[in-house]
Length: 175
Image (cartoon, rainbow, N blue to C red; front, side, top):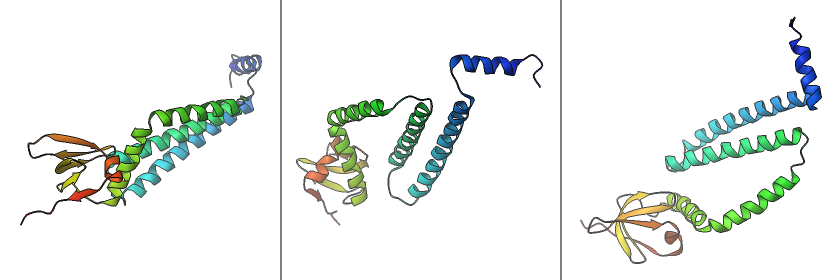
């Protein structure tokens, strides 16, 4: 097919670099599997989220980070296929993730609390609520914060963890 010896030239370069054709084939298969798993996971999560009351921003975030985890697993598989011992990399990442979790514990706490607030449905947008010394009409329920509008029209951003750790009073509407 290649009258110019291109195939022989590529094979010679790969042999000089210590690259095995089977190793290249395994990497291509791993890339393909990673891509397919990411696509299937995305479609599956979108189908599941169509039936949940979660906000769209939460659903998109979960889908996005799930895809990243699949790609990361695929990257580790490819590194392993290439003959690199990934044990030390995984141990280092484990230690790094522990440090990050301590550094971001408030963000994580408010994120989890936001999921619980949304799932619990103790109040909704339009309700007037009071938590600690904050009182106002709920204008937005987000993943990390809930926004209230007080009597003067000021926006109050309340971390969702306050709704989990404190009593919440939902005011009755005057008829």
